[in-house]
Image (tube, rainbow, N blue to C red):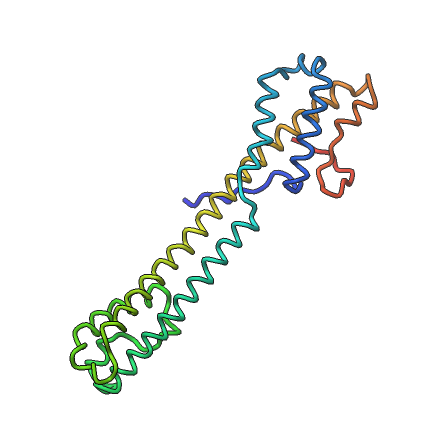
Length: 227
């Protein structure tokens, strides 16, 4: 069964949520005596501070997406170079054996640009075998060990590029999920202590009550935070 996608439990930006956590920690220091009766002690403060600091450990979505894009660009450049070499070798094979011959077909499919990445990564290996076997015969067409070595290197670079893009996507997804978990955990504490503060000062201190009214939108529209 597929794991459901983790979603944010609030619509605050990361920066605004962290700022509100900072404000609450300062308020809780000020009103420590009042909150002590509600279970807020040194250990609870440490936990709150740790939850606030935990959100800084993770890279932003923008940075992670940029890393994926860089990896994708490198992979596409590697593919382009590999296709160029493979196309040259196919031309050599067609000139020597004929494009309708069985020997030519041994070099793999010629529709390089339309091949899926997995197919191209497999087909360059087929071509390595074919070029190695026919090197002596195709020297007159320009085939050389240097060209075969280039084919191998470019194929390995493309293979590595595919893996790096996959890894970048996985890293982005894992990091994003963990960051959302950390932000949700912080928000729950912000909501909890804001609610307790309003409860404590509801009919005793209007100014302090208002200090704990924290809105649930970056624009500060009147939509009070809830657990």
